[in-house]
Length: 336
Ligand code: EPU
Image (cartoon, rainbow, N blue to C red; front, side, top):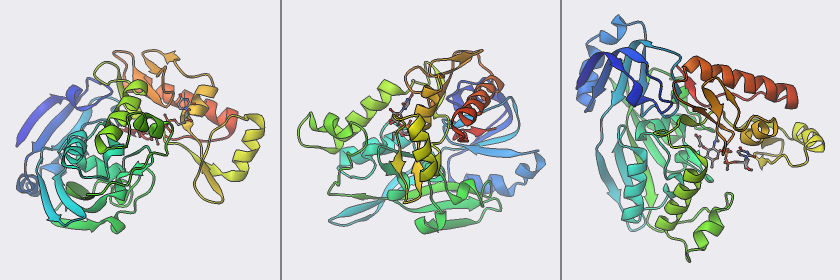
């Protein structure tokens, strides 16, 4: 187990904030995590958070407390039939390495989720999604440890999955630490290519393959989303708002090009990126924080920005969006 006091989190957040934590703890096994939790050290500090690779976090400043991180990086097939495999993966396994592994093995289900930053544990907390797929579609169960060291297995149905949402972000926030996730992958792919121009990109190379989907998704993402190693960011900064259809129809008379995705008879989802771009924010900077020039849903650190600068920019955008469209957009990124 790694244990360091006054530790810089620069390498643990993709926004590139050089902040410190009082104590950083990284465990390699479930037993190490249990021993740490039962030591009582957690309660001796003001607060604690558990992070993945810090790709969905914004630190306002130094963190007075314990930052925990999983280095459980096991991967094992727990069931295999003619049609599918169940794969149990440690929470610290890098998400995209897992996707790559599946594609190489010919296991289908996560190829649309290629090139998403982050780790396996966070995939199950955040219900990551992209290009028509959410990780809940392939999750079988989630193993987690309570703060007293007891473990519990949550069947997918018990995780209350929603759009970028789960029980681990709500009722059980901070109460459990995810240690393993079991995914079900299929041996015969069902390709999901109906998002944007994914189909034309994949079919340009002939019959779809898992590798072709992975490559196309990676290319789309690389074209639009800034590389955090070059420009600090945390992917989509806001979630896409879901609004009543009647409100959408009213907005459409004023903004005929406003895109939407149907959610139900009464509700539609509107891309926040469009709202922000149409409000004139794309590419704009406020201090050292800016709206990405290729994807208005992404806020970037131009270099040396503080968490407060990014939050101020986000607030200004939210206010403008509300004034213009009467829609409240909310951050997807977690403020710490
Ligand atoms: N759009 C604009 N201007 C922009 C950005 C987007 O007009 O600057 C419009 C696009 O033209 C398109 C629509 O908005 O009509 C959707 O854009 P895009 O396909 O880029 O997806 P998104 O809604 O902005 C969501 C997810 C992404 C995910 C993509 C692809 C959320 C909050 N974001 O973004 O997830 O990769 O769809 O499925 O749901 C993330 O969560 O961090 C993330 C990157």
